[in-house]
Length: 85
Image (cartoon, rainbow, N blue to C red; front, side, top):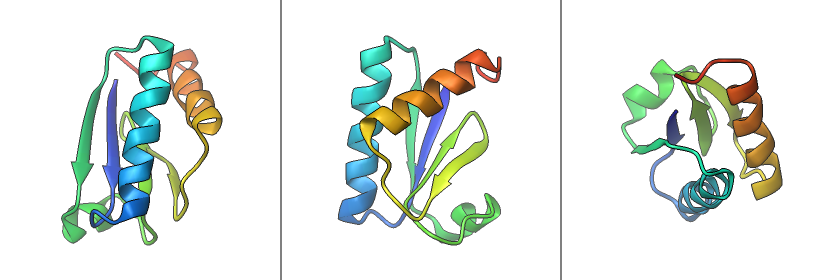
């Protein structure tokens, strides 16, 4: 599973990355976490508000930091829909 956290590196972006790690580790996932701070790459994803979370190429949330429970649900949904290789 490929997971990206999009944002300039602000405290909310760091909090989102940390929550993603906890949620993914809690599920026992094999994943690659990438932090993207380049504004061009962020806008290429269609994101206008950061932080944003991208799971396997799909923007799942932007402009807020979801709870670990919400992130767990997003990761589980991505697995269930077969988006993750």
